[in-house]
Every structure is written in structure tokens, then in C-alpha cells.
Image 1 (cartoon, rainbow, N blue to C red):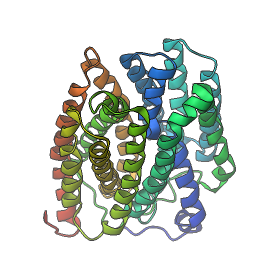
Image 2 (image 1 turned 90 degrees about the vertical axis):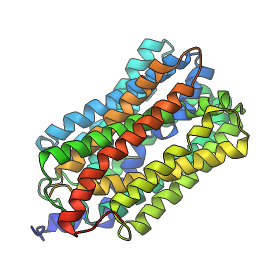
Image 3 (image 1 turned 45 degrees about the vertical axis):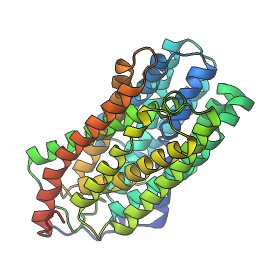
Image 4 (image 1 turned 135 degrees about the vertical axis):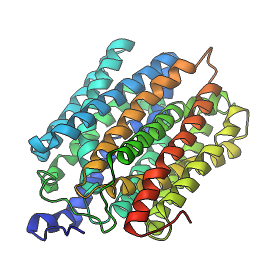
Length: 394
């Protein structure tokens, strides 16, 4: 197996300050997406957008993220990563400030797309750096844990924040938060071409299996984007709950998601990836079916908590698997792009199946795509396991 270089740049990538900077940037990049259910609900209730308009707005931001992520997949090696990160943070700030002056749906969606373009640069490079570290499963788990801590607090306070500050105040928070990361950009590597660390279980899969894995990533996050964007409204309309009840349930689910990420960190090397993915995807999918009807606040909180636990247990396993499918760290870069594209198309596809405020089709859409993603994940994951360790699906 090819051994990683032992130069200073390589050692630097595994340092605490690089990991801490990457995690901070990885939290700030998806600052709106991780609280997207509350944000979409705010667009409907406080800006007067209809359900479809709010979904298209959420999708516009994700399309901006996806566009930048896809572009950096092919162009990142040509640019200084620190400069890209700094510029991306400034774009996020400027776009969110601009949104405070806009109330027209189409213009608002366009500016959210610009915010997404900035966020995409931050997400792409921070996730890529973590994917190039010596222990990507563990470090992705740590990233997701901190993302969810932010999300839990954000979803809990959003109803109160909207009441006290309105959408303008919330947008100012989204504008200022990226500026916090500017002093930490200097700790990030300037490029990944010379600092990639090859995982011990990395193999070079063929193009068909790599393509299958990337399609699985896209399909999984398409389902995730569809369900997540409308989860607040699903809680209000399908479950018949009040605004704060839904917010409380989603806050609890974020803490369950933290537990899922921690479980992924602890179990990353104690079970096969195929088994972990099957448990995570199936477990997180079957709990969506109760959301099609009325339920109490406790059952809603339980359902979304299991869903969030499974999602955030699964995600670091997915990204760790992607990092093991080649020895140059390129597949994980493409995987982040596929993830962002799925999240972009998810709200858009979900908006097309909504009729007269009925959100039940969104749930069934998500369930179908989740199961499809599992069928696509298993062939490359099992092939990698056989080549690296001879591990069967146990």
C-alpha cells in the first residue's frame, strides 16, 4: 500500500489547530441549512411566502452551495484554499445583509443563491480537509457533533428570535457568524495536493463502483433535503402541533443527532461500514412513516429524534467510506459535491409534489429515495471491505 509522505505539511494536516479550524468552518458553512426547517417556517410565517415559494427559496440557496462545490471539485487545486475561504466568508456576510432589504420572493431567492455560493466554498473545503485527515470517520463525527450542537440551539431559539427580532434580526446573525471564522482561515492548508493522508483501508475502486457510490450519495441527500426542509411544517400540519412544540421536538432531535455522531466516532472501527449504513439508513427511514398522520408532541419528538440520530450516525460513515474508495482523496471531494447537489434538488423536488398544502407526498418521496440509496451504497462498500480487509457483511 502506498505510504503517505512524512513531510511537515502532512504532519500539519493532523494537528489540532487545523482540525479545529476545519470544524469551525464546517459549522459555519451550513449555518442556514442545519436550521432550515425553522428558516423555511419563518419564510412562510414572517415573510408571507407560500409553501412552494419557501421550498424554492431553500432550494435556491442549496443550488448555490452545490454550484460552488461542484466547481471546486474540479478547480480547487488551482486556487489558494485560504483565499477561497476568506472570499467565501465575505460573500456569505454580504448576501445575508442584502437579504435584510429584500421582501420580493424572486429577488430573495436569488440573493439566497448568492449566499449559498459563499457557503459552498466554505463547506467544500472544510469537508475536504477533514476527509484528508488521518481518521476521517472520527473527525467527520466530531464535525457533525458540533454542527448539531449549533443546530439544537438554533432551532430552539428561532421561534423566540423571530418574535423578538423578526426575519431581519435572524438574517443579521447569519451575516455576522461567518466573520467569526476569518481569523482561523490561516490555519487551513493552502492546497490538498501535497498534504493528503492515505487511510490504511484505502483502495482504488473501479469507475463503475465509484460512480455507484456517488449516485448513492446524491440520492440519499436528495431524500434528506426533501424531508428536512419541510420538517417544521410537517410537524405543524401533519402532527397538528404548535410552533414551539415543533421547535422543542426538533431541538431534542438535534441532541439525538449528536448522540448519533458520537456513536459513529466510537463504533467507526468496531463494525463493518455496510452493516452500519444498513442500520442507519433503514432505522432513520422507517420512523418517517408515523409522520403522515396526527401525533402528540412526545411521539413527534421521538420520531424526529430517531431520524436525526440515524442521519448523523450514517453521515460520517458515508464520508469515511468515500475517503476509502481511492488513494488520492478525490472521491471524498466528489462525494461532498454529490451531497450538496442532492440537498439542492431535495427541496425543489419536494415542492413539486406538494398539492393544496398536503405534505404527506414529501414523506413518501423521502422514504423511497432513502431505500434506493442503501441499495446503491452496498456494492462499493462491500467491494472495498473485501479488498482491504476481507470483511463480509456482518
